[in-house]
Image (cartoon, rainbow, N blue to C red; front, side):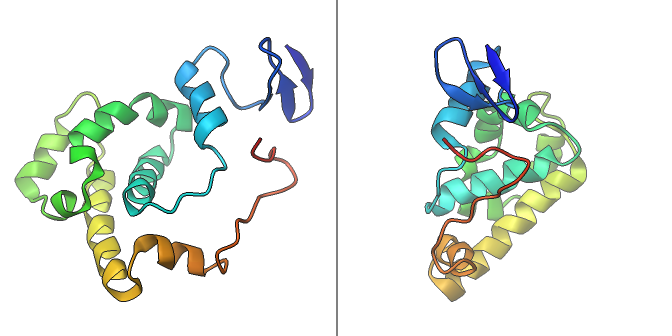
Length: 149
């Protein structure tokens, strides 16, 4: 690998950000296919909100490695199902060894599902709500991070 600043040329000849772990194919796939790609699907936006919430205090790689388990545990991030989670269901999630079992993060996922449902009622979709802040334009961070490739 030829290293130089924020972006590196990998053995396969592709340029990728330094933060992508070349030994973790999930992370490489995330970098190449998902990171920096605009998302308009409410289900995917809800999934990313939940996963980002669980990432707080941890690495994104840690959460990404558990994403399939999160999908199973949270009913494939079906908004209506998550809105209906009661204390018993949240207790089950806190006992699930395959996900991050933080009580407050689990509660936040359920609360956020309910808030998104209310936003959908007002704006038509969560995507419309999110994208209205930038008037539908993608905003790329510049400076210390590399741009999506």
